[in-house]
Image (cartoon, rainbow over all chains, first blue to last red; front, side):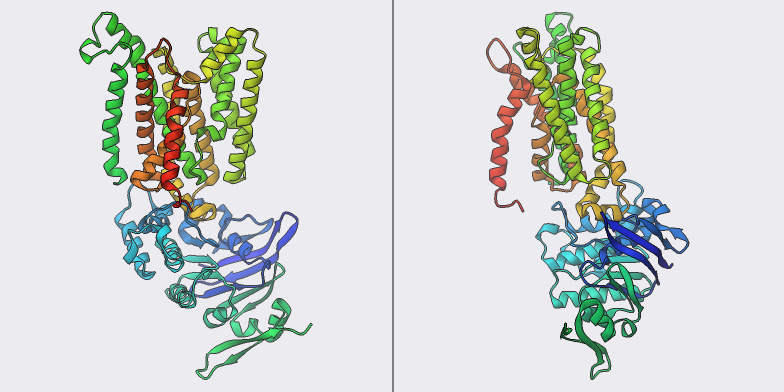
Length: 258
Length: 321
């Protein structure tokens, strides 16, 4: 199931946030949306998730226009982790994860299928241990995993995550990236907005580099994060290199000379 | 304590409070005398029964509306008065008294419901496309406007008796309500309450914020529509027969949250029961106060409710985040 956007334009008040953005994203890949602040990353992700209505252009899931799908059907296929995900009431971790089943639920209670999906999601995120605690009592790292478990519990074919690493320490950041990559390896589509270029270099299968609301470059890491692209988009002096183990790494030396 | 274990307990207390409300008053009427064809039996059928039924239903819809609105706005300070529905219905009622329409059958009731209806339409128009903030601001504007217009009508009342009748009605009471009042109000309150009770899961979803809720398939426009119509019908009808009774919608959901936790869906039914208990007990106490005139229920509720609410805030200080 391919997630695709064609000629998306989106305007915040009068400022264009997205201009003529087209992209094809494939399941089984860890796709990363990169770009400096204000480049339109979150706007693009929210358009892909069907939460924002673009001024023109459309988003398709295979041949279905996202905005034409009923809310419930869209929600079954696309799981979104919104930016800075908050929790407004002190409910239990398990109750929060169970919210992920919302689009699947028919009756009043949770079905056996629902319970199984919730258990699996909590296992995958290593959150089973605090199922009965209140979400308000968790540390930042625990809460991030619980919120990701909520997304996984819906068993979506696509996982869209807006800065899933915000407020996580380096260890938990790597855990979260591994979790997302495992989901991609299992055949799901994963699209994340990331800020840290090093993580993108290490984990991304496919990079969409946005600059001033337009797609500046798209493709594998080595093709997109070239020194000249990084200088133009971020204004930094940086280069990719192979480390002693043969893995691609990024070295940021500083700002480009004015 | 969980929602499941507390609901039967609250149900028992509700039945107890209902029986108390049937019996209590300047004259205590014991169940043995309820259906006698004697003065006590007449008082019971003509006065006590309608009054207890109204106390039960008004308290229930106020508690339920408060719980739903607090869940929807994710703000524990919300209550039905925030939406301006109460004050708009009150303005409708006051207009009816002012114009003498309350002498006609259904005159006051339909004017109050008209007021509630207009406020619903305005709210839905004002808040379309906006989030809870637009909703709150719209409601506050409506509430202030309706309050000012009500004050205006009182200030130009043709004579002191009319002004005093308006003020008395505004203060909220269940005194001397007839079975006709119950028949008028109950169906609307039931429809409104039924609508509100369907919102539980969507309110739970809003724990994730608006984007989170929409991403799992909650239609926020539809939810807002259900809530505005549900609150409009149930609270509008309750104001139409009893004036404005405050505090129930604010306090009860807080109390229930303290007992069963904060999950919005699990406080809906308990809040309805809690609202009924509080209103029935307060109305019974109002009747038992000595003196020639009764304290108005709306006043009693505020006098009892305010210190209680302060106590609650005091206990919760430092825990708020």
